[in-house]
Image (tube, rainbow, N blue to C red):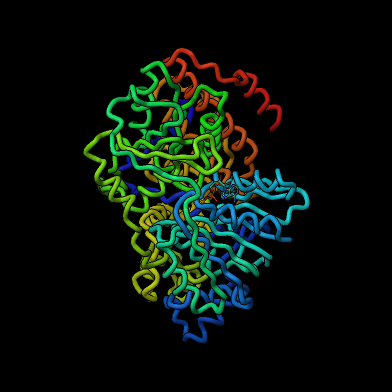
Length: 564
Ligand SMILES: Nc1ncnc2c1ncn2[C@@H]1O[C@H](COP(=O)(O)OP(=O)(O)OP(=O)(O)O)[C@@H](O)[C@H]1O
Ligand SMILES: [Mg+2]
């Protein structure tokens, strides 16, 4: 294959599952500072903190002291908590809209996109900033972000952190901790599951902030059905079938479409975000014939979809290590997507494909989620850098491993799962790179579990170490981006999209060394179009009747090339 990424595969067995998107605050290289790339707290502050603590760098018992700007304020914090579909985010956004400046921090690019759209439509100029996107609007004093992009140095009147229960996530939780402790705003609106309240209150006890809790009730009913779906002939418009593997998603899509009555949109994690948005919009659009959704738990947070009924095809999920039952919060989050207030289907229903799963579904929906006990934490780059100097080593793996071994935490916190970071660290430690560059590659959103994606990272790091300059054409030829013909080539295209996405991410942090951002972005967009085209054609073949309005692919491609 022309693309050398595809030629030199790595064995995926040597890697651990990837972290998602930017797992810690993005940082920047000395050469090309970018005002939108935010840092953890300043090194000067850390140094003075450390000297007073007798250089005990690994003492992480007081993470609130890492954010001096926020500590200078007495923030008013509103916790909006309740079940799904209870208007928590709606209320917080209403306040954000009336503020003179502010940010929304969400867990997903799709949610950040939805909020930016909403504010711009309401004539409140709002930037969209994610790890791989900077959509800046003239005169904007508001920004909608993925939580990792939160700036903890700028002052705002109002900030919103959505889905705060993610603070307990083993890989991304520490970014929510950072946002909660570090955002410097007069008002901070925090939305999420009531199970997070006691932990959040304990975390904020030491900050001097004023905390108020507002409880919400669900706005429209969610009815757990006492009968299972049984057969796919019982699928109806507005149904969303939930399953947890990509292969199952395509199998179930085929099964539903083979019935000849429905066409399915699909939403799952490794689809490009813009494709997910498009698939979700097609499902939401009443004039489209894609009236059923087949999705993974990628739909599980905050999204407003016109779902009438959730059908769990299984209540078990492979979580990277083993297959386990869904937790109570997971069942509730996913089920809560049905019957969104104000949607075409205001009364939601939830059931399972198989009758034997119904007891677990019902008991999960009736139980309250267990309280969260701990929030994620990860040492700042500044701390790691000081530790490295103190121990005269720039071996990133060693620095991180030793630091974590010695780290002292308060009982409310746990150290983020950093197997993935260590794995990438072992690779980049073989290259002549500084600690900061190694750190950047380690925290990049590489899907190390994916051969092509991992190979992309290695080639980027090697070329950067050799020449300080990484041209996209050295590892990628646009001719490899073609319409997929099979599930295998679809997967390959998804992986190529991930490599291009990684290039864009690196280009925002090392602008001079990764100069082909525009090319990478336009190729990314073409990948998404081809994936969408494949998904639509798949629908056509199965149902044989779809007529969703769309621009022919060749015109879309020309349009993209003209605009880049
Ligand atoms: N007061 C209101 N007036 C009109 N629409 C509302 C109101 N409150 C909520 N909605 C609408 O109801 C839907 C659900 O609200 P929202 O997204 O705020 O729920 P949520 O509690 O944040 O749910 P989740 O936990 O799933 O994120 C949204 O479409 C929102 O626009
Ligand atoms: Mg919400």
